[in-house]
Amino acid sequence: MDAPSLETLRQQIDKIDGELHGLIRQRASLVGQIAAAKTAGGLAMRPGREAQILRRRLATHDGVFPVAAVYRMWREMISAFALMQTKNLRIAVCRPADQPGYWDVARDHFGCQIPMVAYESPAQVLAEVRASPATIGVVPAPIEADTAAWWPLLASGEPTLPNVVARLPFLVMPNARARDISALMLARIEPEESGDDRALLVLQAPSGISRNRIAGALAKAGLPAFTSALDQIAGGMHHYLLEVPGVIADGDERLRSVEKALELDRGSIAAIGAYAVPANARP
Image 1 (tube, rainbow, N blue to C red):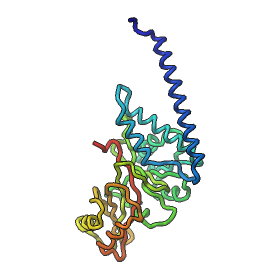
Image 2: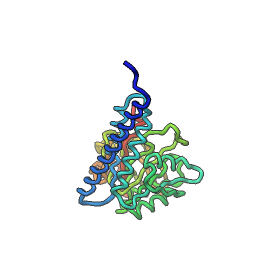
Image 3: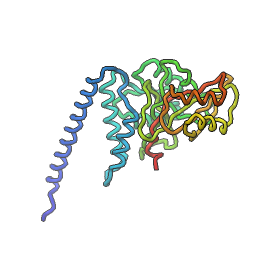
Image 4: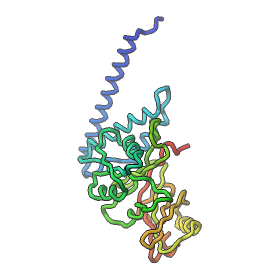
């Protein structure tokens, strides 16, 4: 049997292209129906569900087509559909002049359609997110060497404060300029479970508390053990950023149990969000 001619193969590709485009238009129509059925406005993003969708695509992909390209295709669609549903959606990116890689991380996640604006500091990004519920923030993930930590600000309980809702990059791109950086996404929505998550808790106390004592208080309250803990001192208070498995709401009564176990008469513990564990971090 003769092999198909180049023209026949190209015609088959053209047919598939038309079918793919038709399916994308069909998906856009369904997204439009979902948007019309919603009774409340707000930010049309669900980072937990997005992580589930992307994990399925990455887990089921095979063949020679690059997995990173599959990921990019879905990320572009997810972001474009979010833009369809949220007026004035934009991304505020903390991208200091000497750290351009954070712009790349944000662009790879949100694609080419959503407007992005660069800011020099996390405080500026946080102010922009607080000023508009349609603005999403991208800030450097906290590290021990931070001299002006932004994350204690999220624990004050003020109504316009955002939550941490994602960690970027979810999948490192092959041509990424900076492979050793990580960012957190801030938004004025509640975090949701993806099936493999990390919650962020901020513990504030007037004096230092040992890691062992914190671990004991978490266990006594029935919370999982922390996987990491950072310590910052600001305004005469010790601030601990704890990362624990799962998603924990700020109203979780177990947090009050931690306060009692640590006898925090002048301190507190608050949940400031959660993120889906990135695909690169999964076994």
